[in-house]
Amino acid sequence: MTTQYKELAGQISAKLKNLRQEIPDTMQAFNQMAAATHTEGALSKKAKELMAMAIGVAARCQGCLAFHAQACVKLGVTRAEFQEMLQVAIYMGGGPSLMTAAEALAAYEEFGGELAV
Image (cartoon, rainbow, N blue to C red; front, side, top):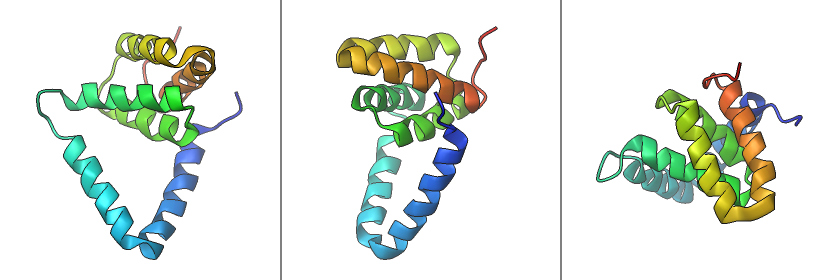
């Protein structure tokens, strides 16, 4: 694995800044949807973030891995919770998701998630 997820998140953030200027209505609508989705409700913010990461793994989205790993760490997701989410993502996405799950764990660790000893 050669992806540096902090660097990737920074690169994507810079491109998103351009998109906010070039397609402001779309970006504002997306940001509103994200904010509405990530509120506390019947599901906690943490549960929703784990779901987002699982979908990112199943979809094999590298940018998703970077942003959602960072969010998982900020929300206090434990390694055990992260690994159980990876189990579901692998189950739902098969072999390709298994490969992406290993990358997701690397992203989680890079952002300061509980490190393997």
